[in-house]
Image (cartoon, rainbow, N blue to C red; front, side):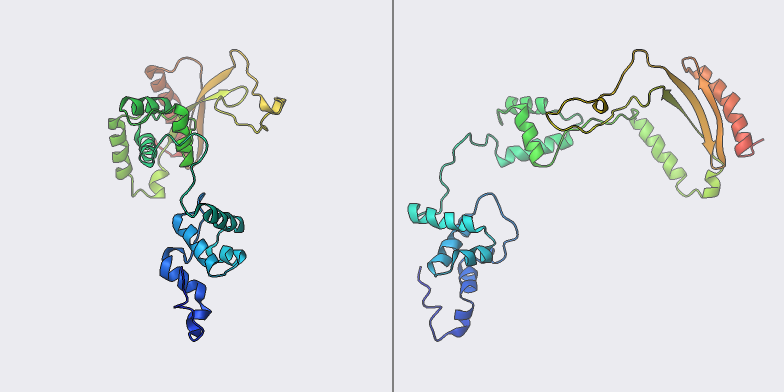
Length: 270
């Protein structure tokens, strides 16, 4: 391509910004390239060869287009050999999912109540959308920064429970600190002899031997106790050791025998 019309000696303005005129006229989308992709686009390759044909150095083209110098060199060499900017056939197994299937996988996982890679792979196969393995499903999710994690345990809440909690929140939305000072909170908990029975994480280098700090010791029939307790703004109330199975009748006896005295002492109810 010949650009002598734009760059004659009598036109100093065009001659001064020669490379910018080429980009603005023929490659307007490449004036400022912010990020690099895995593969150069056809527009980027055309810009490289065009600037090279106008006599610019590889370093200048690399700095101007924000493309590594080796990529500029390889693009020019490939064009000189193939006389084309089209990508050559790649080796290896081609990608087995399209962009549409990738988006469908992410949407299904986000909207499912119990997301599962195995079930999703079977569902896609049954619908004749894609025949892929659960591992492929996980890879597509990982590409979108979606990773599996242990589900958190929370008490089950029905629609009625949720409605009651919402009504409670709205009814007490404008309570002051003085109002909450008259409230006594209570709960039960289990105390283990050897610490929490939840998940414990540790750090270990891949392939290294298992050491003592990587192991969580366990014993059969680990001893634990159940306790009931209460507190208010004024401080702690009674603590009661629950020795039997907690039934409704026993819980009522705890409230009458432990909560009432605590309320009298902390809040001053008579």
